[in-house]
Image 1 (cartoon, rainbow over the protein chains, first blue to last red):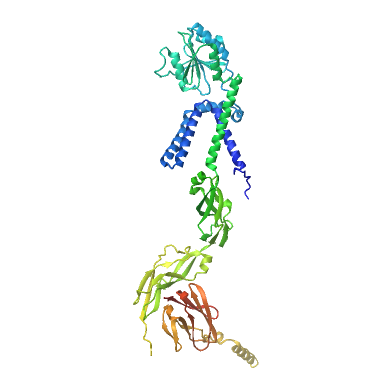
Image 2 (image 1 turned 120 degrees about the vertical axis):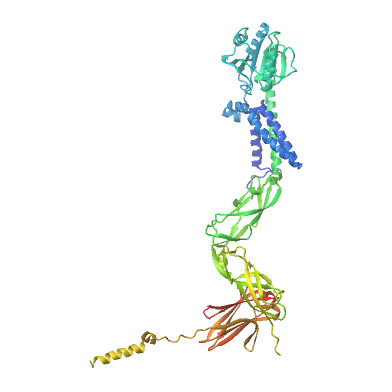
Length: 480
Length: 140
């Protein structure tokens, strides 16, 4: 009896647990990596995988191979290209946040101070370039910054961007409530379709947002215009309220009921998608469990006494009836299914060796339904040598009027090697059949000997050719 | 001297009387005759107490095949066996009485269609010691 508890749907409790566990793992990965390029690339790989499965189901062999190759390469590329992003996500999380927490995007960035400072600089027409990084590290993108590590304040920002200060001519990077670097050089965008009035600050802001998820605030020195650059989009800020709203969205400060609700809905939808995806994948692998296949698997004999040899086995392979999902059954390779019989307890002579379940190795997810035969008869014996006489085997019919009066065999005996018990019952070695039909006079025939059973072997180096010298005479006339 | 001689004479007489001749005189006694198989053949039939058409291949059409054995000398009444084997399987064993001073005897088997193939007859003495093996074939 199957100890597993079946449900009406055919699902076991293990299957439900399997789906839920993997769905949660997928959801946690989404939570940890959301908003990064890693998650977008992972989505692309998932799409490629679906195409690959489709190609397999349609029998498009080359396409499926190509897709497999691309997926493998893409997975490698994601790890290499986004290693900093992955590392920053993993390093900044504590143990709890891996499994349970919902990390905020930014730690308590004082948006009001930034907004107030930016509009003060706009009013005074002080050019400014402020970077608020999100999750993706920008360390490899920016250059030549001067470490600052100062607490963020309106006066501090105004001082940095004040005309003539040594550090006013670069970008200031703000992490949380601290100014971490000033006078930083950002990569310039190579776009040709930017507005003509965009200066170097604007071009640098676009360049950084092309390569990171940071928000960059630019205050125009000529016009006092505030512009926010985010994800390659350019937002012309009309007033401080709009700037505050944009920054709060970016930093993840969900203070309103709507914001909290939207956040919850987003995570809920993500959780449902994860559950649906894993359920779909699970059913694509384990659907039905009704697919049956019969495999002929060679038997491997193990742990026999080193002094003994296997001289006979009732079968050299067994038939295994396996069940599992169609996908898994199709993917079973012959080398994954093994039947290994333990001969540790076998003795000289005939042994009945049952084919127990634990002697059969199957890949995960494949069940054994039936074994044929359920036991093998294995004959083990000590190999010995024995010299046996050779006898000729004749076939057919000698011509009427002839008598075969004598036969001599050269050599008249042969040394064979076989199991001691088997050789005990063998007293003669016979030649292959020699037809009598063509014989009219005496002569010599060269023939082979027949080694029966097949486990019987000639002594090493002995040639299996025998000369048969025969004498034939005419039958004397019947006396009246 | 006259008294001791009869004693030595008696001792010598008793020793000669009870000792075996070889031990005393070093002469060879004649060895007892041993049962000897002088002739053994497979044949189609027996005619006038002799094997007719000895051979090593017999057609199944003959219906019968015989094993003829001749012993000389036969020192005493004894027994021999003819053991008929087909392909190393004992088909029949026959015990034959052999009488002095010389004796011939034979056994036969009736042939059936299934008897085709290599055969042998082992001739053994009453102690089951192998004296001769005769090999032959039954064919179409």
